[in-house]
Image 1: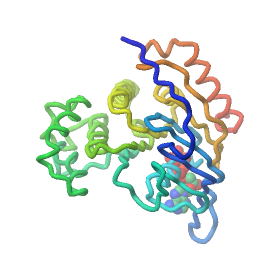
Image 2: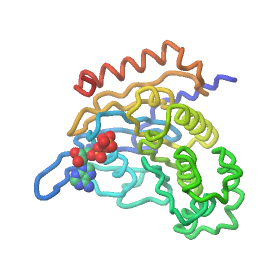
Image 3: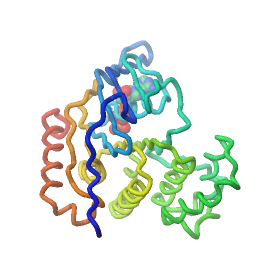
Length: 269
Ligand SMILES: Nc1ncnc2c1ncn2[C@@H]1O[C@H](COP(=O)(O)OP(=O)(O)OP(=O)(O)O)[C@@H](O)[C@H]1O
């Protein structure tokens, strides 16, 4: 395979795909304050793949929801493509931890749900549905019902559904956490292939240090709650990353750095 280096210079906040400035989020469940995030400054370049790691409850999902416009910030500012986020943006695709498919719809109709919700014609996008189904290895299962699919296949359907409207930005919240190790590796390889083909901006949450280092251009390590950015680790490895990557000393150094940052934060006792 050819080594294609996709390293790019970091962009200024003004021309970044995502720019978070002084972002904080505080919840008030039953009157008591929970500070989930504080002082988050982060820019993500156009077409960049950024992974976020941190302990359970440090605010990763909250951060993703703020970027997606699914909830308002308590402090600071979130911008996507130079526009302040004030609600859900049609140019964003989201994949959650569980695939959340409609059990009465076939694979194809679950993917088309995104088109229905956005009032985009199914017939105009038929070829794109076919292309994504082929790209994610679901060919032959178009008419299967969700209960007939494995967990990995269901997550592939969710990935197709997040991509069908061709979003510029893909937000993924621990999408492969429930999969077995082998399926997870396959999904990582597929995601990398899709990303290299489409060059979407991706923000990817994971609990796996190796998954983060394998997929991302940069890995954001967060502190325990209230979540702050502890350090951003650049992953200076060529693409496509393959099984050989796991033997690369640069990969091991990056994983060690992320691990030591997490240990120093008391995340890995
Ligand atoms: N809607 C909400 N109402 C009240 N508190 C919330 C809400 N959403 C999140 N929290 C709190 O904010 C903190 C961060 O939660 P969040 O789900 O973002 O963490 P996380 O890092 O994604 O965790 P995990 O890795 O376990 O998924 C937690 O203490 C959680 O209880």
